[in-house]
Length: 291
Image 1 (cartoon, rainbow, N blue to C red):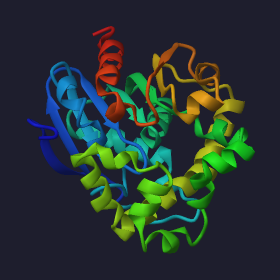
Image 2: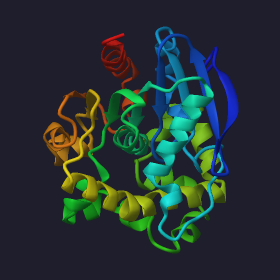
Image 3: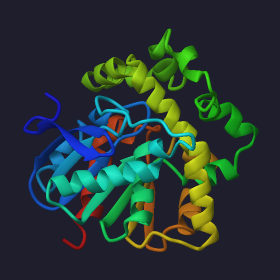
Image 4: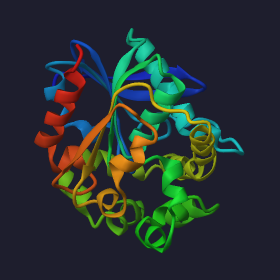
């Protein structure tokens, strides 16, 4: 059974947003943030073991899964990583934590580094899984990006939701990821059930619209100002994933995080589900330091 021993709850974090969250374990706090097109269930194979050493808190991002969506805004700020970072701070305060560790995969990694930049006093250590910063992705956009990351451009289109709604399973899980998510069992059932909700489809589109506009511009502003992440950062990537094929991940991240380390894991994009033991070992080792 996934997340055995964890409590499931709905937490009001303000701004009209309520997050579905699982929490369990004891010890120092560790916030786990999921990616697209998933939910907190992506952590189900590593969270119970992490809970032996940490208080693990795993929410659905605003609008994703069974978390409630915010109101739309013309500039897409309400779906920005800055807004999701505010959710994270409010959520952790709900559980009594002002300072905590963060591990985020994919979109959750983008929330994680924005959280560390906007709230440096809150983040002790940060792990990002299989991403480079949003602004860096757009700055390097080329033919390879257009063909390989095509959903980044598609999801921002005004009528994307209408084209996805007739068959969200095809769009989110087969066309983009070659059906690998179907192998993730109980977690996949949750992803699919949530992805059939029109409000979740809209939220995922808005997330990417924010990425192409509000998030990108914020990254560009911070980089121009020389703003960096103050806490230690670990970067993990899939050796068989796009990040490793296209970029020097550590080279890109070094401009953002002076206290940096990282390595690849022999898998694709979905590290905690494809290689849970290796991902668990990396998370446990890094986040145990200094405790």
